[in-house]
Length: 309
Image (cartoon, rainbow, N blue to C red; front, side):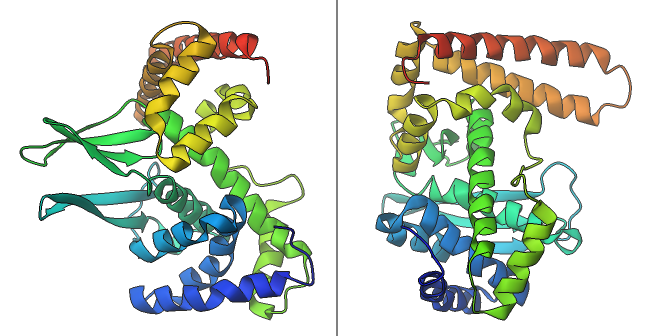
């Protein structure tokens, strides 16, 4: 899809009515409604028009809730409630935005885009199960439930890598939104919002504050031309069971993908502890730096074994 001054307004207008419909249905305020005017088209642009129906379905099924709960760590969340009807499992989906009244426009857009991107990358093959467990997929990771009781047990170790990739894609989508401002937008309200967004983001592109330490460590992996397109394509399609074999084959060692995710998850938990601790932080920092080296060693091996980087 090539956007220009001749077709940009047709592109926007195509989705404004849809956003109005879901905003009326969910009783969204004007702020959420107007942000969705630019967020929804950006998702269509990124994931291509041939995936339009899936994107529209996701925005129709996932409701946004505003919260003034102050949380310095979890600014927003994508949530599911696992349910069962006539022997079939399904989920009720929703997004919660914390610190709502204090958020700037870029922060609100970041939160909404980040959580909807989790949702979009979870819609295909969302639920799987065996005799003991039910897995509800969140991109690369899974929420694991006991099948007999449907009680939540744990999150899988891929959660950290999922957040790193999702944050990178969030930046990409917000930069798409920012690029809309270079066109001649007829809707004055949207044009003004895009202008203000461009002023706040600046000329160097949007960079999210989320998972910045982990994202910087994994930057070469995220940008790798073998890893990123393959993993993100399988993640979007819900074919994540293929990923470990592909990653392990490049590394040349079994369980390398599992090892990477375990290290990233352990490091993420240490970072949370470090941010919450007031004193005696040096030992935690040393552990974090040890995990950092372990991740970098795996990435070095992956890069060295890659033909196409």
